Length: 71
Image (tube, rainbow, N blue to C red; front, side):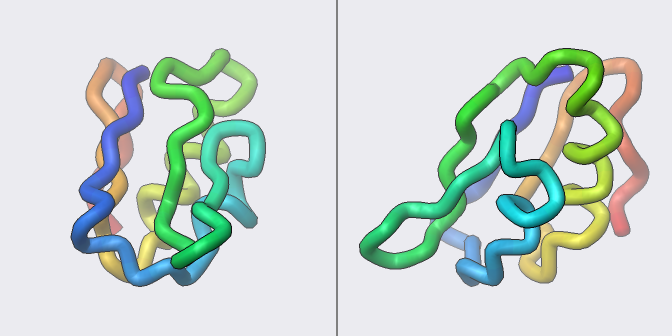
């Protein structure tokens, strides 16, 4: 699994950091998503899929065999 984000479209809701805090964080100055792990460990895959499905701006994508369907 490889995580990608479109920072320009991020609305800084923090849902990703809440659902997958080992993979996502937010910049202090504007709250935009920061990817901590581009290739997260297997134990984080479900949390990343939840973050993809629940991102209000739909700016998170995942490539790989276990990529989630868009929410």
